[in-house]
Length: 444
Image (cartoon, rainbow, N blue to C red; front, side, top):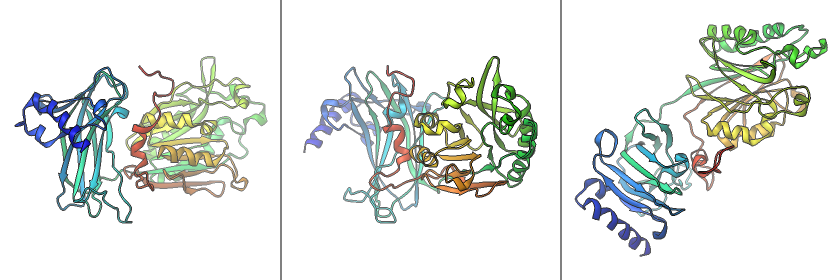
């Protein structure tokens, strides 16, 4: 009874402004968890994409406002449905937190639908693809319809933001084919150079394994940490002695291999930039050029005591198959690095690593729902860090067991990890339920 009164009270505000004959308003009903935190709702004729009508949610100066436009869609006989819409945000500091869509599959009695295992399917959250060239954010995803589902409840939600305007436009929920696959082959090298006397000789020994992965069709190849430094201390060489610029000898050498095999290669080296020396990793692309550089942010005392300087940014690199972030060794021991890379859109984390706690690799992959690729100098007999491909479940999909070997796994970046017990699709929930503000920023 209270809920019906709340909806009626809010609806009065809407239909008084736009009239009950408005088709958009008839299809959608405004709502809120509690009347005292309800924002304002209205329909804006012609205010949407390509002159379509738009649904407006507007908040005032009160904190904690929370509300939605809701529509109940009867389902046709189809295995998959595709949701899509556009949203335009004004005065919203973190759209990924405050503006999103929730889809709930139910039966005729309003009960949650169940999956093939008989488990209830919690509400689902489509992907926010970010702001498009037209200035509108694109929200989209294809869903497999749970068995027994006869309708879908669609909520266009706005919450926890003051003095903001959010428009929703061109909302579609229609039968579809299955989601497209986005296959990528992730590879890593498990090798320690033998009897080398220079960085160049290290590169040449690693090259044979890069060629092996390249010939097998790897889309991304990860090498271990500081390949221009490994083995050089026995000749009295320091970090600064072997440091080289980016672009430089290493990226030129591996850039030729990347171009030959039409792949991306993570090239970790000790880098010199003016008077500074960094522990870095360059990503070289299929054109042989440097896509970008990550400089290790978290330094152990063994490095900073010898003059290595920390990086200060968390770049994420767009490749033809998806977005890649890089972490280096000690970074894995601190959740902030992987989190920040994930916040910025990384789907795959490349981790050149001398050695480290493997359980933390599992944690970084699991808590961020990403793939993680490690390449290490640690011997498998030590039960320590491994060279391998880690999945979003935190499990090692494949690991190297002997020196002079490679690992490669083909994965589908469009495949979501879903239906955790009592949680549902954790990956989809992260952007809307993680801590805010972002690392190193202040809430406006």
